[in-house]
Image (tube, rainbow, N blue to C red; front, side, top):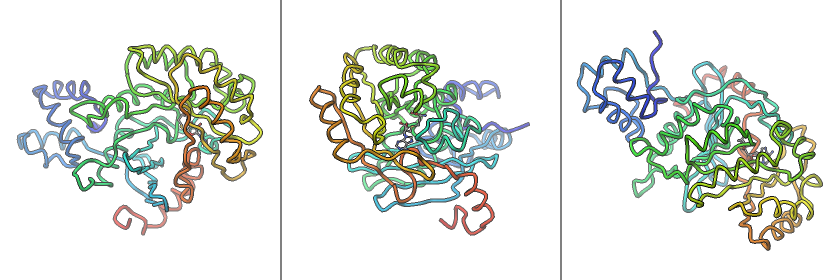
Length: 364
Ligand code: SAH
């Protein structure tokens, strides 16, 4: 019998687990708090459980997070970890500290199936979905690795699903992990501080509205179908018009949500003044924030980033139309942690690291 990894169980699943083994439902709350609020990794540390229950859990359950293979710190403070999963696959996780917050960028899949032409994860192809334990395990692990700030607060204040993979193509596991992030017995984060980023899987986005209430980011990158088909091929299945309708649908509850649009700036491809003006038209009536992302190059890409002046011109058109537009700073470039640079060569690197016994968690 394989043991249940308790990290992956949200409040409901944890309740079911304890009912099934003949325990009282309040045990679920106790264990959730031990795992996610105190960050314990041993059942023996759960001192309000009886000794016999702890022994039983040791037999039937486990607490297993991904393991660190490699830990890199960028000059700008961005930190990237290469993590190993139980089956030997590897994923990446990035922490981006800022003055007023700390953002953890997590992965939802090993590789990605979407094949966006400007993204280096695409080159790796799709391997498999992460389990909810592997997704929440990233946050659990980051809290352990980073410790607390001098005020005793956790350093991770925000989570974004902007690592490897398309979260909406791993719907159940992602939603279950997000439940734990916002659950008061879990991480207790505000739903505004958990952001799901999608390239636009329309039916899943419609479903998300029924099950979740987190912040939404959409990787738009082009305002015309012809170009978006090329940059973000899932657009052929769910074209811009359908995507915009799904986004309106997602935010039309209580009217206070907004969509963050990600727009990678590719020189001569999607960065003209006409593109900017069409973007203004497209976003009309949708509470929006636009993130302009300078393209991060990777080996053998045919794209270049737009230059600074072009980005400013593009930004000004949006700002003058009243759209909040941020030019995203490129972070962690020196350690390949910037957008789209996650794990092109992970498999390769992982194998290399596994051979090198010196690089273990203890030695980092
Ligand atoms: N699949 C999801 C989650 C990945 S998020 C999504 O598409 O939203 C990663 C973000 O970085 C996306 O907006 C993606 O389009 C962007 N990105 C990918 N490659 C990039 C690159 N080389 N330079 C800049 N941004 C990139």
